[in-house]
Amino acid sequence: MTYFVTMLRKAVLILLGVLVIAQSIRPARTEEPLDPAADLIALTKPSAEVEHLLRVACYDCHSGQPRYPWYMNITPVNWWMQGHINESREHFDVSAWGRVSGEKRAHWAEEAVEMVGEEEMPLPSYTWTHGDARLTEEQRLLLTNYFSALMR
Ligand code: HEC
Image (tube, rainbow, N blue to C red; front, side, top):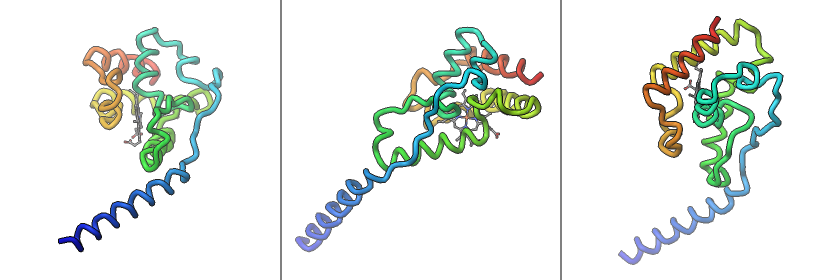
């Protein structure tokens, strides 16, 4: 029994040591200055309500201006979150809206209608911690209408 307790104590200490050391290993962040010539909101000038929804429900992952929360300083949470940001911008980058082809924009808009309509976006892991990103039916409709108009 005492042997088990000693081993457990050692295991906990080693784990804590690893976590402390891991704090110095942080992912590269991807904040960049807003480029009004490429930003989705700057270029499409949506209504104030749609703009608000885009900012609170999409921009933290899909733009170059994420609002990093304090826990973004904690390894390994930060790796998981930065991974989401990098992956999401590969699929849909609101900060590159003005830099891609019209065809690509239409494709992104179509995907966005689907993702928001089918409640796949914003990601559930995000809405747990961001109450204002939990969209009502009405808000989903506002967003899908907005993106539908951008498909043309
Ligand atoms: C927590 C981060 C996060 C938030 C918030 C978020 N997304 Fe995403 N999004 C992702 C990730 C990760 C992917 C890529 C993987 C996938 O498709 O699940 C993605 C993919 C997408 C795609 C591409 C789908 C495809 O298959 O090509 C679109 C379009 C999209 N998101 C739209 C949105 C819209 C619109 C919002 C806001 C209403 C939003 N997302 C909010 C993380 C997020």
